[in-house]
Image 1: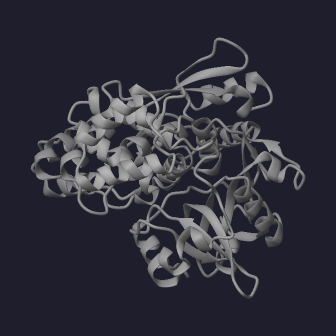
Image 2: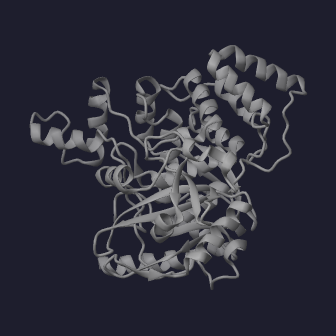
Image 3: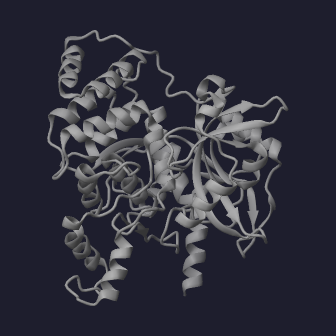
Length: 466
């Protein structure tokens, strides 16, 4: 079930502006590198990667043969990472939607065809590196090399018929180039969900990576309809509203098809052979495009990092309702989105839906259950008006000598492949919403199913547009 504590609260787009983010993170945010916190060893509470009984030994002939083959394909560094995945129980983890293991899907990546322009060796190395250190996941776009410029502008013209890719008008070409040659993106929601999948569900992450990079460029997932709404018809309404292709042969489950937008393959092909340090991997490109497609009602364009869709009039990022739906179907879990800030019609924060101690209790309870907590936080101007929003993931907490908490977080837009830390005094007032298990919050608030909120939002947008 999808919920919001305040269904009429202001919906704000969660993306990120390069200028605003740079100013905040480097100049004002009290964030410290992971080394300053001694990483997970000093965390009082942290979410675990998975709860299964660890299997750290190759037992069957099939497992041994697959492992031997993979090691023959890897360089020395990646081979060590593969061995570490085995010793830590990640490699043989099979908590995926179809019960295939990390090993199964890595082997499939290496031995079966990839989509046009994608290399088995590249995808294999990226998959191993990412589940070894999910903090490598980033939302930073890569530049478009000269040899791909003509194709990029041709694809741009398909959605922007006012632009002629053969024009000699330097102003028009300059505007088109600036729209496709991006550095910063609005995929923070998608990147945060990708991080959560890689850290907590490694077998499912690699299954996604394998299928999305295969020639079919899509992945199927069976979900429980009860994880979307109490009533099956409401769950079906949600799937139809988000335009996710699905098949439902009974009243309990549905098989969904997730796929990146058609321009994602061009960006993936570029990253396959022209990836620079700090830029997205091929897997990042395909995964984030796919998740943006899910949240934007199949209306995302990876070329320009813009989206359409019926629930949002802004062309960047995802709103809270869209984010919660995406989390729920990707994880097949009953996610609740708690809205903490009260925002008026002028996008100004006027108060909070609950006190900070309750916020802390709910976040800590979710972490203690082994859950990461993806939050949306806001930046404001001097009048407390929201000027930007961004998604990060809380992975743990550490108590300071003064009793105050430090929140250990992952930010996919901070140019750093490790955890960062925020003090509770800094972070809590900025949290607009948080995705939490139902059991954590059901006794604290009167909850409203989020499909009701979505329908109300849609009708209000239609009324305003009339």
